[in-house]
Length: 112
Image 1: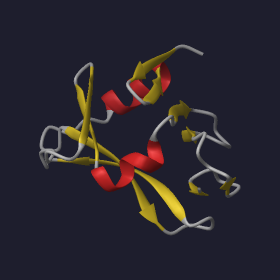
Image 2: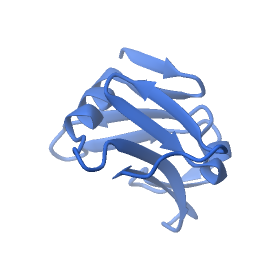
Image 3: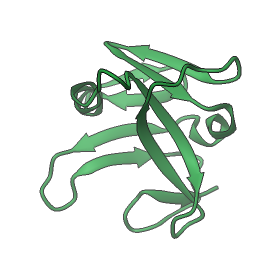
Image 4: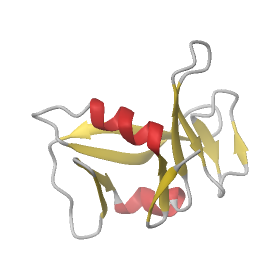
């Protein structure tokens, strides 16, 4: 699996291609964050936005995409790898977070 290291967050080539294909003209930036909730306490969130980053946000650039990681989420996402699978049964974005000590079965929520 080929991946591109983006400082502390790794995005595989498949995930990068999928994210780039979903860019919206009116929402050109991707926000990668952590929200409270889910079976294990926190859940990953990928959403397109038109907001510009603040001074405290981490910003990563790859290809045509600008990814914003809010300051409050950054500490939970350090070392995370984002992958994408187009498998019919278990497809979608997959997150591998070395800080996670427990994940739910779907892989979308976790705890540290």
